[in-house]
Image (cartoon, rainbow, N blue to C red; front, side):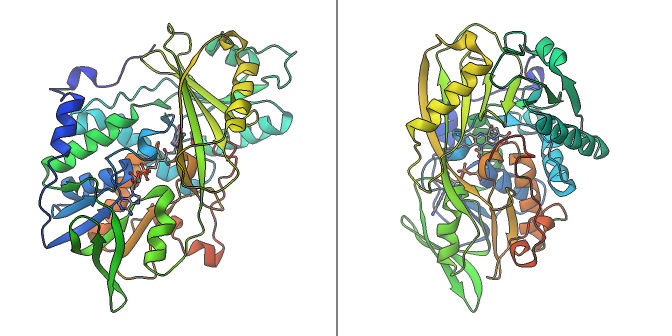
Length: 417
Ligand code: FAD
Ligand code: PYC
């Protein structure tokens, strides 16, 4: 197993409880902020952190209806990679990857970023053609990416069934060595602690119930706990609830909210020291540093906000995983859960101005936003600080659905949704 980057550089680390208490001090809201960030997931907290630390905007409030990191940030399978097909997406995710590489040191908090590599398997000739195309595109963008054959894959994952007799034989894979996993809740806590240290106010258990709009401009939010809170700019970073916030502004977003599920096994001894994903069989798996097998599914086809998913999807995923790893057939599963992901028609995010002045949205990350957390927060903070979209964000305007300038990452993202 590879070890966490930067471990030796961490000066001190608060316990979970101390973190919780610190983030929980729930300050009294000021009458007015420079920026309100709606949503205390990884992206919202990263936005607040970079606003204060990089752009000198410290009068920032993060308003979270539940607890920080309790949304998709704390529910995902933690895969971090930047091997996207199109230049616009590749640049954005690679920006995030570069920030991941220094994140534990930057936050002085161990986010357990572990660059153990990610394999995206190919099971058909067409899969392999797509893999070669994506690998070539990645390399042209300076992103580490290789196309491997069956034998090379088997060397990296000796316990996977790579024989020719399986229903979906492994013909090869794309391999990104710098990709890996991180500890998702530590990301939320690390950004929250960093933002707090720079003067950001974080309000948990506080729901934004409406936007305050005057003369076509957003001037604040209404909350269930503190009434009206005003700000010069408001950024919504609410993932699966983004359409609800957009409706408060009187416009629609081309988003669908779907359940996406994952599950973990009981801890077992180290057996898998990389990340295996398969578009074709609909499953992805890694092993956490605690020893649990971390397994994720495809989205459920129906829309919903229930933060739980359906049994048939999980059953299908486990069939897929067992096809690849018959050796795991007797491993007992421990916990299963769902998150609500916000998917765009072109499987790319929205980081955008809106029809309402001073109201900005960062959403639509769907099944793949954990990996983007530092990059998303950084470019959104830059945009909120300046009142002008960061160059890396510009291709992800919500208005691309009017002009047709979509960045279609369907399937190319290595997950089948
Ligand atoms: P969230 O963490 O969901 O934060 C949004 C916050 O907004 C929530 O805390 C919510 O409570 C709050 N909120 C909503 N409405 C309001 C309101 N009205 N007022 C105040 N607060 C509000 N991505 C990857 O890159 N790799 C993966 O391996 C991966 N696996 C996944 C597996 C699963 C099962 C799931 C569900 C997702 C997965 N993802 C993955 C996707 C990733 O988790 C998300 O894209 C990412 O975490 C989104 O972060 P966020 O901060 O935007 O959203
Ligand atoms: O985008 O890498 C990804 C991913 C993995 C699992 C869900 N999304």
